[in-house]
Length: 265
Image (tube, rainbow, N blue to C red):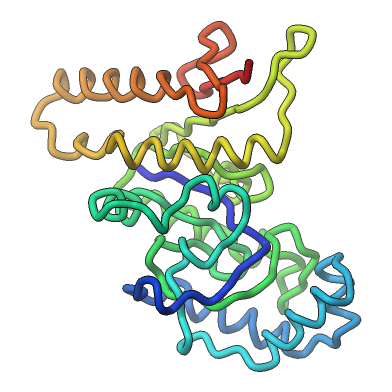
């Protein structure tokens, strides 16, 4: 089982909290993107990132001096967005850190896919950025199937807690043997679920923490027969459905086997 989440735009260097374990699997592909972005002027970067001058200047300087092998921080501690604040990885226990290192993957426009303890530098590059790289007209074409193939190796279940911008790089290549479970966090308005981006990010972070605390789906690889496996998966579904943080509760009437809907009261 793998859990996928989106990155955050805001990042920082935190080398003193916890050391990174590995380099990202697609470090060479990231290096090519770095070299491409180093050719951009400040104004070109500002247009590409659709940001203000202050943010563009910060990232222009980052790319100008970027070294993908020095001053690295664990990815899960480097992102500072709302989702990561509510996940609160800095206070994970050792077993929770081991769980996310095994099961959680961060999708990235720059690095492709990251394990939580992969060493990264601060960058800015959204997956939907209109960046042309050689013969590739955007990042979706550049990454192609690479992220998907890396993610599904030996897996048959993906928990999707990523935004559409990022989950698209997985969903485009799904095959019937991969179960892909979407999570929806919203409010019921006139009988329909309305999703608030900010509250959804908060809930996704809380759900990662909830899964790590409960070690959900962590034992399924070790089950020795089909009946035990089915019982364990059913048990995990039941735990997932008990998620009640931030005022959310599971809405069975709006859910299915591949989409779990939680509504906020």
